[in-house]
Amino acid sequence: MDISKIVITGGPCAGKTTALSWIQNAFTKKGYRVLFVPETATELISGGVAPWTCGTNEDYQKGQVRLQLVKEEIFQEAAKTMPADRILIVCDRGALDNRAYMNDEEWARVLDALHVDEVSLRDSYDAVFHLVTAARGAEDAYTLSNNTARTESVEQACELDDKLIAAWTGHPHLRIIDNATDFQKKLERLLTEISSFLGEPEPMEIERKYLIEYPDIAWLESLPKCEKVDIIQTYLVSPDDRQIRVRKRGSGGHYIYYRSEKRRVTPYRRVSVEKRLTEAEYLEMLGSADPAAHPIRKTRYCLADSDAYFEIDIYPEWKKQAVLEIELADSEEEVHIPEGIRVIREVTGDKRYSNRALAHEMVPED
Image (tube, rainbow, N blue to C red; front, side, top):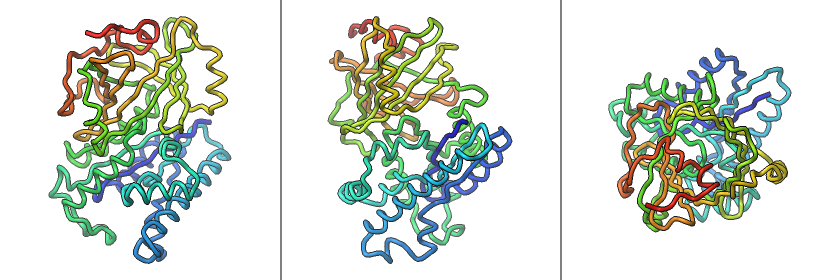
């Protein structure tokens, strides 16, 4: 049984309700049993429990996150009992959406009260898809008339959209669907991104990679939509035509573990299959580490910029350069490098800059 749990989130008037209907139709036809975890805020507020009826907003948010997690657990346990090979659990917003409605101190107290950490909470979802508010790029379509709970002005909608993206930044599979096309094409792009993540028709990964000048770390860490993640990546003994690796990923002493198997198809495309591991499974797999490859330790800065999601890898051995990567839905998609990042050259397909090559022998700095 293959169970995937994804989040559909977005700013006000982004098309989320219609998107959920499209997902139901598209993936049911592909043979998935599609389950929907309803938006928790709507349930609570329609029942009279709201930030303005509770003692404080923090009291409300604490209850909303708790209910969100209980619902997701029930859906996951129910999914395991269903006679289906492939199940897609779609969360209408996830637990990290709540962070956009609190300051850092309130959010820390909520996590502490629920005995959870942000890394485990954020990365408990397999993928996150953010639909950008119509207030940014499709202002003519922005309306308050189809949702009585929506009161945000265009400026407030854009501000909330940014906060939601910032809340999810750091997730390994965050995709941002902007308003560069009309609404139908926007939803088609969403379905393409979900299909690509699920491996439909096969688990293909498309990426571009750039060698960049060593970035200003203080500047990166000051950006609201940038999140620092520590990674230890270990290659296992594997056939010549593929790479098998395990990864420890997280921050602040909290980690999630993965096993990835990848096979290169073209310089831009590779088949990639990823599985989440328990800590015990991860430690057991380290026993099959390739003795010819040393573990790669790096600091990754996940950066959301202009509705694109970049990953900047800082290696401790390098003092003058770093690597920037972006995953794409189409190899022909135009890439706009964030301002403040200076590209030395593109190294997509250059095997010297593959992580496997770096694990065997660190590429010297230019």
